[in-house]
Amino acid sequence: MNKTQLHLQNLHLLIKEAGSMAELARRCGYDNSASLSQIKRRLELQSDDENGRGIRPSLLAKLENGMGKRKGWMNREHDPEAEQRKKAEAAARLAEGKSEEAHMYAPRPALDFEQAEGRVAIVSRNTYETQITVAINLDGTGQSRFDTGVPFLDHMLAQIARHGMIDMDITCKGDLHIDDHHSVEDIGITLGQALKKALGDKAGIRRYGHAYVPLDEALSRVVIDLSGRPGLVYNVEYTRAWIGKFDVDLFSEFFIGLINHSMMTLHIDNLRGKNAHHQAETIFKAFGRALRMAVEFDDRMQGQTPSTKGTLTA
Image 1 (cartoon, rainbow, N blue to C red):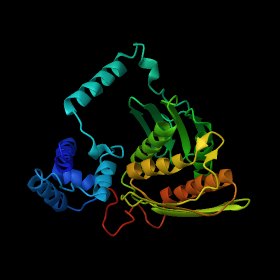
Image 2 (tube, rainbow, N blue to C red):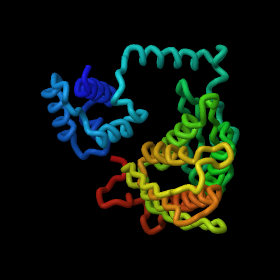
Image 3 (cartoon, rainbow, N blue to C red):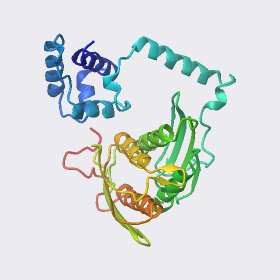
């Protein structure tokens, strides 16, 4: 199978998963499906060309992000029936509840979110790599509890909760025997899903948020637009590759997962800093402050959607 045939096959799988070409286009940020239809037609015409270039990398990334696939998914062969069997087996194990693997699934939040007032969301995401439950209350008081198996990430998440005045409870059981990558990335994904769910139609919110936060010699700026369009500009040059046992490259993976599933535009700039711990902490504190501003209700907006389009969810 050449590259063009592989991309065409996987495009068909995405269309089937989305339910239609139009829905796939919507999830990937297109106003209509014409562009994807043209790409599909081109792939069909070039399918026998061994030198065919397939789909360009930027569009591959857009398709993968829009459908929640891992990077490189479009460049791998997939067996839908086998994958469906695996999902069914996982669902069966979860339903049993008393099986040997039942305890592998992330427990319910320890904080009381079921009775909480405000914009609350509880999201669980279970895969063969991670089992995660995220609970948030956007109208909270900054309470938090974290049990992710990645201590430095717990420390950073606590900054979001405290400085964003968001109650957060995050539990993750991940394949830490491999490394922290899957846990950190998937926590970002699940937190993004919870933010999107808690925000609902976004009527009456400020939508935009920004913050500058210093910590000794370090200074970071974070700007947020709850636009309904995922986008990340990440300008951070850490002064070292590891903070204790934590790989700083994973911070960008966390934010990529978060923006793609919360549908926010996020600009992160570390303006200066010599201590990598300080750099990271100013970023997460600034993100919490900016998020607090963006999700707050604007009294003058009086329930209106903060967009001339009339929607921030389509």
